[in-house]
Length: 255
Image 1 (cartoon, rainbow, N blue to C red):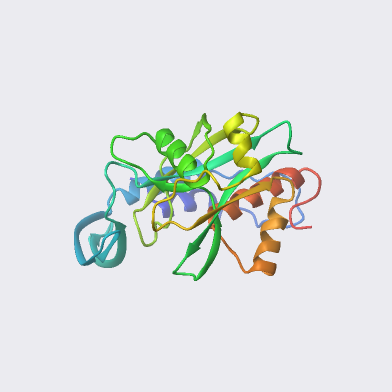
Image 2 (image 1 turned 60 degrees about the vertical axis):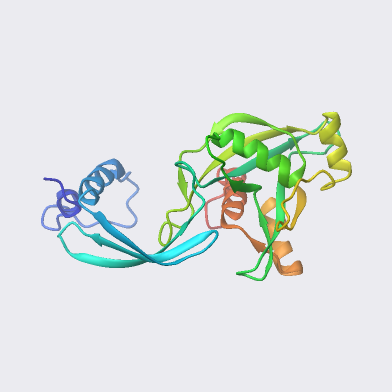
């Protein structure tokens, strides 16, 4: 039977492995697949036995999960769930690229949304709940059109199921990549008169933000410092990855 301890001990035995010289230039082999397989085997023994809801609202419910660990121990865990899930997916996030011969460089379509829990405007990807029998791509195109007024096409790049805050919730999403042709007549009008073609619900308060991808991370940081905006973690992660992809091969990480 596999265990994490057994796998780690197999290549980390102090009595058989020589001490590591920090100046040694030889490659070190790391085996993440072995660790992952052992962990997966162990975690399959964890099991949720019940959920006790303490509060059920229009959008969310909160309560306690009772689960058993791999040793049979019983634990209680606070949790929150959406009440709106109609299938296997709560919602979608839209990574929307705007292309146009009339714009200088690549641009990203984002939204500014007031979020009462943090009491500030937050920069986010267009996003929303999936409707019943709706694919992730269909939901993404609908939400993009409603929140920003832009009509796009799914690029064929859709993520697997992603969990937004798995330490406290089972809320899930898929990230759908969409391309918007800014030279299309309707989309171009929306570029010129940004936000005028939104189809928002009564309780939605969103502004459309079209930003160049060049210098995105610095721009987001400047908006935080100068305007007090909040940044959705997914947006910051994308901007950081974009920045690292451009600098990784040019200079050592951390310099």
